[in-house]
Amino acid sequence: MIFYFSLNITYHDFQLFYRGEVNKVEVHDRNGRTLWIHGRHFRRFLTRSGIVGQFKMELNAQGELVSLCKV
Image 1 (tube, rainbow, N blue to C red):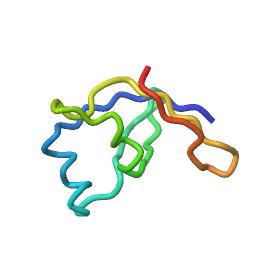
Image 2: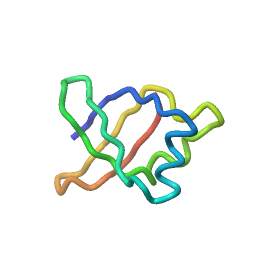
Image 3: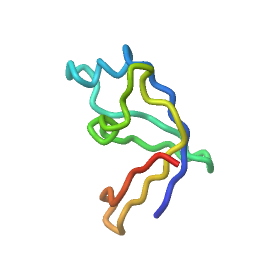
Image 4: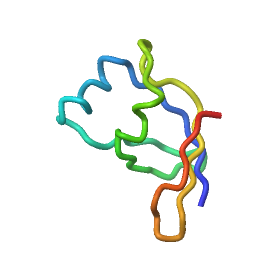
């Protein structure tokens, strides 16, 4: 299953994940579905501006993450 979504999280807001106060990011894909994705999957996309962009996420039949990339 493939999902496309936009994300715009400030650097400051993402610090909640590092402090352990929050562990999942809520996003809405292009079809309006709500997805909860563990914050650790976004760490490599974090810049001083935060995490901003369009993303593509692929899950296997068991619902496990196969890939997450910026598009």
